[in-house]
Length: 193
Image (cartoon, rainbow, N blue to C red; front, side):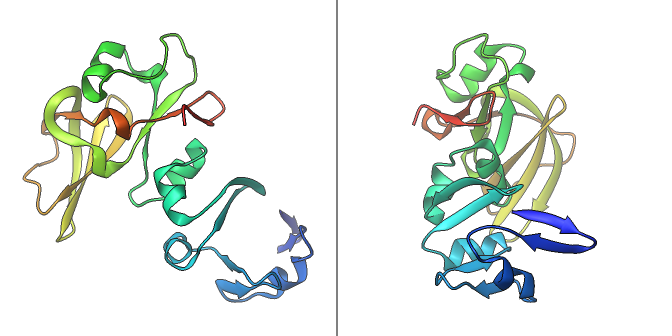
């Protein structure tokens, strides 16, 4: 959709290029009756249907709750939500048994190169048997705390209600419910419903 001519974007799809090119605001009423919205929060709160684009390609068309709860691609999963969904490449996990202990039986066969799992930050549970991780940062936000964790070189986010009494450098075990796992193939497409 987006091409550049000199320093101005040129939009080229569905006869909306003139509307979008003239737009100076973040929200634009289109002839179709829809809005072009660049801000994720605004799109999620205003829209009945969202068309999520990446590099001019449609990633998913769905109501906001479906984008969040059932992302069609790893890009959709990571893009929607703050903090974003944790996308863990299975190739980075040394022992599938450790991963299975963290989230129950994995719906992915061993040897599935390039596949990944996704878990929303609010589904991550601390101090449970599971994946050994180290606390990298703790952000207290009042009603909740966002915890940045490291599993090797992989950054993971957890969200906890209230104030979490943790400090950078703390070692924790993390887990998640089996039904919280989203599986993505080597092309980033959701597998298994």
